[in-house]
Length: 273
Image (cartoon, rainbow, N blue to C red; front, side):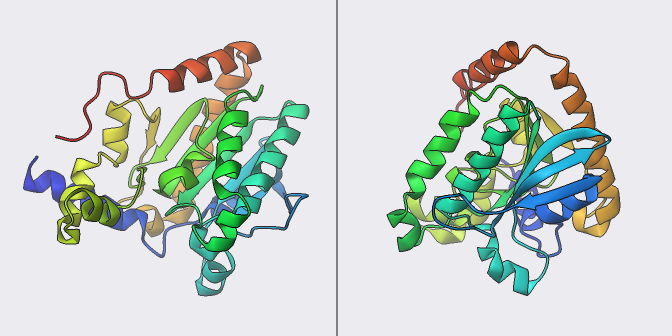
């Protein structure tokens, strides 16, 4: 580990958290030619941290789901800063099951520091909601693409991360918890947060080497927030490429390969030294 490695990792953590970084709802409405948002989990309520619905991209019908922090302070508060509650994950699963019934590919956009951990969320079955998503996504008979656009925190991100193709923006991150939490738990020293960022292997380059993600999407210089339109266009191009490839595959083969992908995750790798 070098000082340069630590700096690069910490810089990417900060870029992934940039308040100006485009949100999931921005990408959904920019990428889709048409999008109709659907609401509610048909059980308890509607979680605005999760945006979900039906859309079309170049005449391909898709279901699009995103965990979103919002575009401004008002939206940040409404969307609970991208920390989803159980009803958000249940809503996303409802849309995914609809996608399966209509043979529509699923596209998930992930940007969350983690699932909401408040008392009400726990009382309403946060852990079970996330677990149900993992189980159901592992066997859905439609192509699934997940895109990490900012923060990918813990089970809150994994709940939309079981997929056939995991894409990641250059300056996005994906990890079991925050670097601050990692440093506090492992070393009992929160001042080592920058070192933790490097040790956690949470950058797109690290995760590509570990075969956690499949493809890195280059960002404009300085980050996606510096040219939102270009970033959306680049992301749309890659998503279309991956959708068209997956749609040519036999659906049973897709499910089998998805299963094997996650069975083999983490083999022969030492993450922390």
